[in-house]
Image: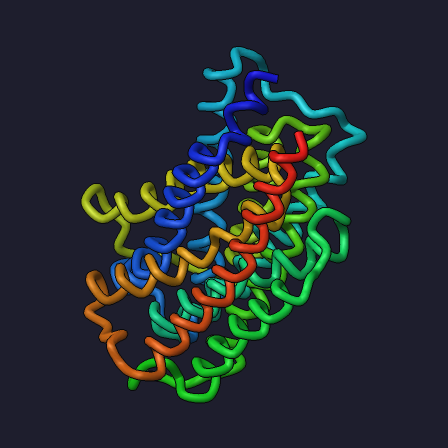
Length: 316
């Protein structure tokens, strides 16, 4: 009960959610930098997936090791619950990141960050289908429409002067976003009976190894890894370890919509960090308009959630 009280505290949720979104936002420029440093071209799909597989396998191992030290017990999951871990991994890791890595290779970091920001909206919609407390309302619907209008602007205008919307670029990132939105529901459900740390760790290991093995067989290859630039791979693994474990714990103790709505910060951080690291220029009318619509749309959903929360507290 003490743990639940901590992770349902509004201030704790806000701080942890913002921290998690910052890490996810930093993934866009870091991955694209990794492609360049490790000699992975836009068309080399096998190597892109191999890169992702190694990252998530390492992240899963780190989660299990660190989690075991903190929880002071061996990382065990009942055999009968393994299908649930695999089910989650098919969407959370394999489904999401196969499309995400392939899409990001052909999209700018700025476009990728904005489109991925629609994940918060997708989570709100899907949560409304599965949970009564998260059911859709007029305010939520308007917020979602505004958010997706922002995504449409990126699709039509390209968001930056460098590249427009392509099915295998921005389109794949959008598919990854849908997979991520559904995985939030699975995390909420499965974390009630499986320790969130182990659930996250094992699904990463299964998904990462599956991706790496498949990519290696398909001819994937990564070059240029040395003691200097391996920090990129380590950072991405640690990013996944911290962000996904934190997000999983928050989803366990809070409604999917309440947590997912903070995802509007991902495109904000992603655009800013892409501009700084990749020297991309997000300061144009289409990008600013798209980003504004995404953020305003999710703010409306968030505002409604907060009002509902305050009303509930008064009744208590």
